[in-house]
Length: 568
Image 1 (cartoon, rainbow, N blue to C red):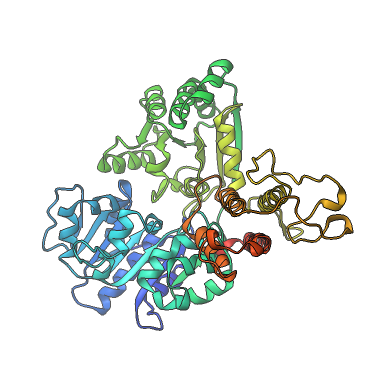
Image 2: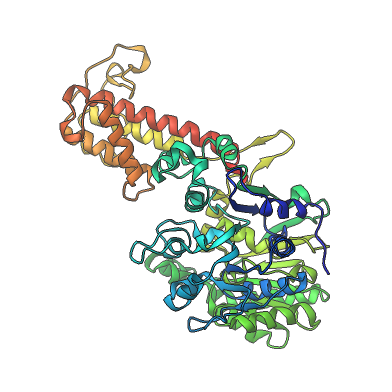
């Protein structure tokens, strides 16, 4: 019978200890590789020592993860019949004590209605970040209230409600936790219960960042337990990564495709050009390191199948076309058969929830880069986790002067804390907030100088003389006297300014409801219900307030980034 590491007992206690309200609702936000599945299995065992007839529902991503839960329950000595729901037509046996089902099958009424017929001692959501979007149908089924059927959320069927995730907020924004907190522990939010209030308080003006982190941690301390593997496991080997650049040639053809085609077409095209170079690279690595096994992560199906065809006797695959049971077989072959040197896996299919590779493999190769920092971290977590006894190294293969380099650069920019000088204790953070504020200032200055419909090229302060250049605060630049705007501001000028600024902050997209609500608050302050009935005398001070609001939000963003947004 396996045993827990000392630090994992704290995770079991967290899952079993009730909230001050008496609820057994918990989020185990422990990093990848900390053993969340076995912690949950141990918690189930302890429930069985306390209660008679323990029943449960485990909801996981599709594919391999369901069967890993099945195996862990068996290995850990969980008592009772475990049933894995495999298809939308399954009839769940009445004598099943523990049901394992993937999120996607909840969309089928035949499965969902069967799950709703039961009450459970516990419900566990594995990779619970799948339910971060309040508008998503799966989130609605798990956490929401179905107004059409008047059926409560599925998670209400359980007494113990457990959320497990190493990346519960993949984009490091507390807004992604709102559906879970609102449903399970709304009492901790107090006056910030509504989505808009919560977002403004903990996520910034446009819900894009994190702020008031210490307050958030204090409010949710009994609900959320957060642990990083490197903080609790002293024997964790080192993790390193490097880039290997490949010159594909075909410059003119690549330029044409990248400037005329959709993203999916570009990725497929580049992947196919990469195939011969990747095959050669894998042959070289296998020859140089004959005792090693390699986990190869790809994005497109054609690349996976071509690589497998090049190594038919020494590779196995895990991707969308592989059945769930065959994925289990292929993973087992990679782990147990010495002649299988390569596990060729699709990033989404094997990037989360796959355990056991670390016992035989320390080398990962990423053939096609992914946009997501969270996905990248999960990939590395397949090898860099408890059970790994050697240093881990990942190599990214990048085609030069292509989309690959763009993705790689942008993903590193999104990893806000990737550049950290531990000796000086400083974080080097790059932000575009100053540029956004400058855009506001330029837009306002352009309006005051007669450019009510300023284009991007016109959004620069137009100074006829130094004494007529004014800042948004109304104070003259260069110490001169405050001057009157060259053009009298109109209601259309105000509308244009608001539209331009909010659109800029929204990354070029449409203004969000939250942004519109913030503008409405400012209008109310100035005695108006809309831009149309804003008094002409208030135009300039209204623009100043918009500027001040954005400047304050920029301050909060910068502080939030420096504090590493909740530690997620």
